[in-house]
Length: 84
Image (cartoon, rainbow, N blue to C red; front, side, top):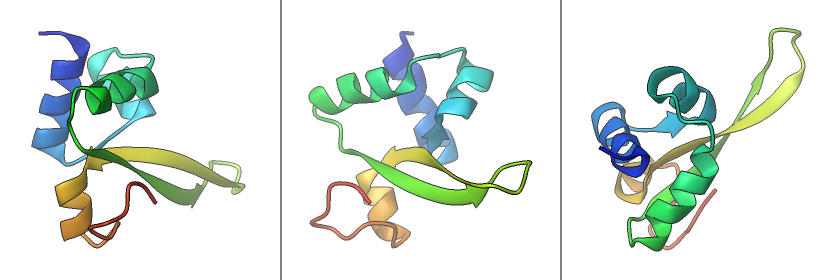
């Protein structure tokens, strides 16, 4: 199974994936590159930006990648939108 297949399987099983999760759970270091390749193959993946605070209580953001149909269902993007 290649990295793209592992990512899609993880997204299907868990709903989404982040760069940190990809590194820790799958050993994938360049998640954004693999997501771009997945998108180019025709799979509709969206980027959902999450705002939070880090361990020093400083504001930060990260990206959570998910299938568009799930993001629409969860109200994170509208049906006509690409990313949020």
